[in-house]
Image 1 (cartoon, rainbow over the protein chains, first blue to last red):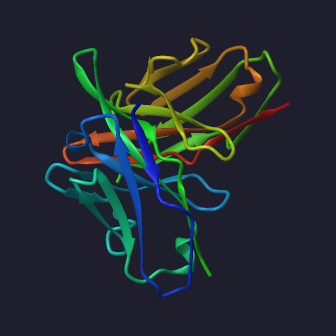
Image 2 (tube, rainbow over the protein chains, first blue to last red):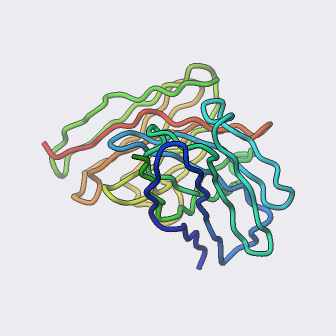
Amino acid sequence: DVQLVQSGAEVKKPGESLKISCQASGYNFRTYWLAWVRQMPGKGLEWVGLIYPDDSDAIYSPSFQDHVAMSVDKSGRTTYLQWSSLRASDTAIYYCARRNYYYHSGGRHYGMDVWGQGTTVIVS
Amino acid sequence: EIVMTQSPGTLSVSPGERATLSCRASQNIGSNLAWYQQRPGQPPRLLIYGASTRVIGVPVRFSGSGSGTEFTLTITSLQSEDYGFYYCQQYENRPPALTFGGGTKVEVK
């Protein structure tokens, strides 16, 4: 079974650091981009960034570029999202998701087909 | 940066009726669009990619259409399990990037 399992809920104070994780199983971890997605309380989905496990190539949404960092442990099949100094506005559920690709009508298309269960981060 | 706008914000639909959700892109994205369903307390679920191709296992009552800047998700004969939030998302590949719309809530009328 293809699965993404995320680390547990965190309660932190402003200014503290944090690293949350997402462990993959059931597929070739190295060759699929993994996304991080934020969902603030009662709000919609926001793309945080994408990381390619094979070479750790990381692409960030402009809205998150200077505030978070993504990393990968290939041997542990785990990706991480971390903050060096949390803010109250970081309070949210963070999801990891696999970006799969599909061939259709002569083109390549993408969709996030497997999601982690979400990690709740509370900063207060 | 491409901006995705969904309408309406909330759609009230009776069971068995049709729901029509709209998504607009701020620039031409061809058919690089996916739709997701999110039920309360759950992660999102991929329904459609390429604007109109259903993921395996998604019921046929879900259909997507459109290209360029205007897209539609139609749910015919709404079932109880279909109530929740729906998000469109555009994707790019060089470099990889994506943007979500603000979402549409489908609620019981």
